[in-house]
Image (cartoon, rainbow, N blue to C red):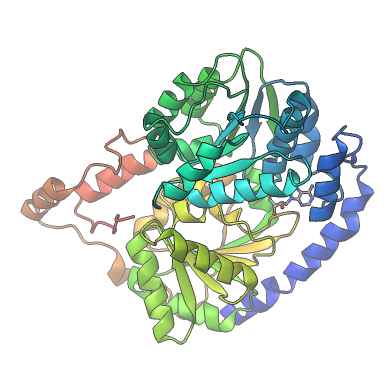
Length: 462
Ligand code: AMP
């Protein structure tokens, strides 16, 4: 069967690609961390973590950041960008101040959209700053604030925060940004997607004007560029690493045309036939993610879900189990998956195609990290064809269609036109977009037109 041929032809490429990476990577002349003039306490820590040479973004950014220049970085998670900003910030703070005396004021603020990402960044600061004596902490919503405020009271040098909790604790007087000298806005495009723009504006307004600012975004549409102008000084250093197309090219991609109702069967079939070490399944909605876990369970496949409705503890547990290999299947919504960093993730499955094309790049970027290659399989039902077209346009690539599989889409799924009266009713029921904001992309316009024609609405509860 074609699916078998597919699984047999793609799967062996994973180790092969790894070998290619490992064999050929050393041929390039890389700089060393010593050549980047990183101070000994940090060098010692990064050696302990096992980094032998800087990644391209580190090589490009660290020298400018050590010269206290502002930075506009077009890069996504997986490129080593956390160390690219954390190392120079730690080095500045270490060189600037006597860290042994007095109360610690917040000297560096890193704002990032999700809790998972915030936790991961804090872990990185702790690792790289192990021998510097620099104190850092992380604050995020969804948990009681007591533990966080207790640490803040004692004083920290570096604060990593999600926007909502940061503003909350600022308004209660637990956080002052008066002494911030190094500011990082991370994953700016995702911030805007999540509706954080007003929060970001409020935070920026409280920062000292004299500061070093770093701005990272995986994509650079116009609204992001405008936001970067507000945050960065006159002539920031610009660094682009792994432009979208490159990331997409590194990952082997295929799409299955399948009826919505057959997606569960196809997923179960693939998870039982394709070989994988770990697989991340994307669902557009939280409700959908839970449903996927349930039907996989019925098929004797152990999976865990991670999304915004889960408690912080449950999310962390699911992530830990996934990272340790105890759970091989993790089902995630886009926002929850943002901070997931698993180096050897071999397979990503898009159970739903995202309606925002850039999200597709973020998703498939979960595999193909740290020089490894990976596989991304997408399910596309008739409602999602337009999303697929947009995605292919963005990545400038045709995604291979798996034409022979047991759940080929049949014509009966194509929505039929509803009578006029029914169409009117649907229009009235149609909710406003999640953040009440204007629709930004052509996908949304197309979707509205689609609803007007009476097509069933996808579940949008995230
Ligand atoms: P990030 O893009 O910051 O999320 O980093 C992605 C992954 O790359 C993380 O697991 C880091 O620990 C790892 N990493 C960062 N810098 C290096 C390096 N110079 N050498 C090897 N791995 C690295």
